[in-house]
Amino acid sequence: MSQGEKTQWKIGLIGFGAGMLVMLAGNTIVNLMGKDNNQLIKKEILQEQEKQQESVDETELNQSVVEKAEDVKNGTGIKTGSNVEIPKNFAENLILYQYIEYGVRKYSEDNKKNDRYYCDIKEDWLPYDTEFSMKKEGDIPYKTDLSKEIIPELVNNIYNFKLEGQNDTIYMAIDTYNMKIYVYDKIK
Image 1 (cartoon, helix red, strand yellow):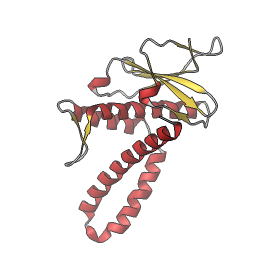
Image 2 (cartoon, rainbow, N blue to C red):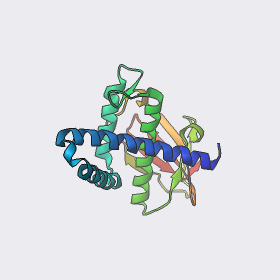
Image 3 (cartoon, rainbow, N blue to C red):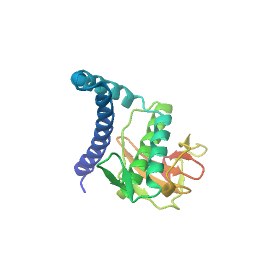
């Protein structure tokens, strides 16, 4: 798969997720307010969602994971509405992407970096026993808390990923047992 195809897949996945959120929020508000205010409401919804997208925080991530955990418990997929069900493995990957995005965003904010990183779960998933370290001896890896709720399929595990950046490569360990995300700069 070429870099362009990877980028298209990533953009498509993000667009699909954003589109689902827009549809669900839009339908709820339109039903409550009536059809007369459709145009105004849609415009307000889009503006509000743009603001919310820019300021996604750990609380929203927690709520999203809790809702998905409830939906996954007994079924083969996650129902996002009355007519749509997403396969369970897709939902698991989507949650892992959310954790990766959250970890990279917190890492970038705390280190005052503005780099973009790319990760394809299928290709950049590293073995469980991969050992990481830091390039400079004495440096400690970046660490942040993971949400306190997680779907049962992702519990008590460590997920390791390679993230290619514009200027460097970083490595992320998502520890769902200790509920932490670690970012390293090299493999031992």
